Length: 354
Image 1 (tube, rainbow, N blue to C red):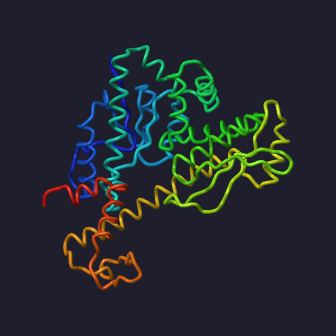
Image 2 (spheres, helix red, strand yellow):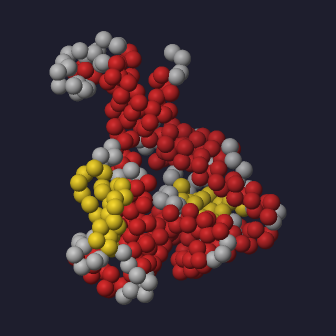
Image 3 (cartoon, rainbow, N blue to C red):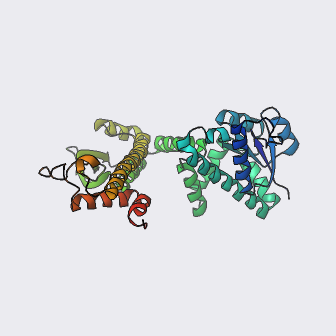
């Protein structure tokens, strides 16, 4: 069975006469990249003849180079092909600092395509037909399919559907589907459902270490609340408490919302968005701090006598001078932080023989 893959936006050079060094470099890069992966029978088209090539080949996979705009045009024209939008070679070498990142992204995508091609070979025409049907689905078709999977009895299928919806690196439609699902779930829930929804959102804060559960609270009217204390990024209390009212089965959703408004508690979609943002901010913060700590430890490793001032480190204790080298306690703290938040850099510095 022949499995055709069409690459749009790149055609290997057949004649290098008069070609610029940049063109030769980009052509060499793509030739070597494609040689690493089994992508089926590969064909090429430029942006002048791509429609004719699609009509001729009916490719299973299309790799579109040049950005989302062109990829949308291809998808509109050929809905039942598996489409991948990929950076062109020029963008790979555009900024030196990003070259390796761009190359790794290419390899990841092409490896995924090679896996699909192999899956099609193993599954035969039935698998190919299923792939084309999946690719041709509209947004509504895909959303309804995922909802049916989530509410169905097949646990493996339910888990796969959730993973697709929660994957921020997947197709952009999944991000919108997740938002749609969250809003619809919140809107249709009764008081008890909304309570559970909000507690689930707060559980995400707890998992990230930026909130902790407190004892329940009852107000003067006898309304019970779950209570949560928010914490800073290092787990210390911030003296900011959030209260989530207990709900009841069948409770009118507007009555429950009125209680939320009284205590200025965010609604479900707002709280879900908040938890995602906080998770991202925490990750960014510790990544940034780990980079700073790594630079300090590299400088210290090169010269143990460097002062805290030279290293850019504030003394642990006020009575310590910034003209002195790092103390054992300060050094241990910096090492511990780097090991926790960037293990690879820590091992490179302290567990790799010089």
